[in-house]
Image (cartoon, rainbow, N blue to C red):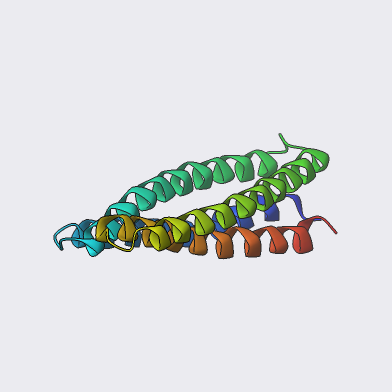
Amino acid sequence: MHDETFFVYQRQALKPLLVWGVGSSIGGSLLLLVPGLVRHFGIQAAAWGTIDVLLAIFARRRALLKAEAVANGDLEEQAVAREAEQFRNILAFNAGLDVLYIVVGLAIAARAAERPDRRGLGYGVATQGAFLLAFDALLARNVGRRFLI
């Protein structure tokens, strides 16, 4: 295993979350101008996007600092391996939560036949959950394959 590679990889791998978050925040904010279902979908996009941006910024910054620690010899190979395993485990747990977001979002939308605002909320949650499921599951798989074998 190449120690510094994990944190460099981690930082780069979190970039799609940042891009998705920025796009969701901007797109969701624009959708706030449209009434009904679309507005409530936009509320979800803007809110989740903002959280995704913050998570990506802080996690990418942490990965950069850890990569510098490895380069300076301040972080041992075993510590890097533990970090990679912990990151993969967090992603796997989050993937389970993402499935829950999708199910709950779709259930809200299905039960709100006469409420466009609730349907928009439900579809918004399900959409965010779907992206996060793909992101978390693929990244967990890739971290496991590249750094934990």
